[in-house]
Image (cartoon, rainbow, N blue to C red; front, side, top):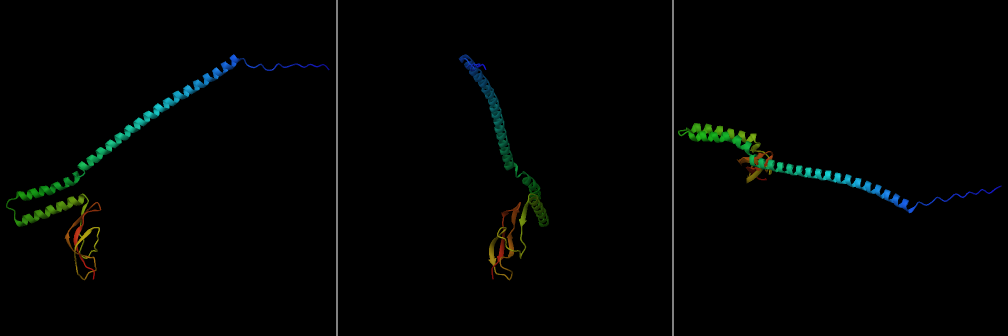
Length: 183
């Protein structure tokens, strides 16, 4: 047998120039990738900044519109109410223009004007609180002015001295009432 040993030459190590070239190519590729990523992030940042500015401007516009609406509501909120009271003022002017009015005419005019006023108040959700005699005293809607002895149950309305009013279920003025005393 013959000894045929062939020596495989060891793979030759790359030359330093080749290593340097490979590293430069890798660095170049990495730099290009990072520069592309930077461009992409800058574009995304610019887009987000634009979206932010638009949203900020829209919020500012909405706030300004809301302030304008609140201002107009405060300024003109009573417009409907005032408009419904104009016929009442016209009726009073017409009544005062009659120089030689009879007591009967004055009474009829006052009644008609009161009906107009009551109607105007009701159209604007201002409703009278006028409890009937014998109704239970309600401290949320009534104010007791005096207490009188009576045969009725205690804390019962005896008389209404002045009507009260509610506006949209909120007490504007409580009714002034006289109530029965506890026995």
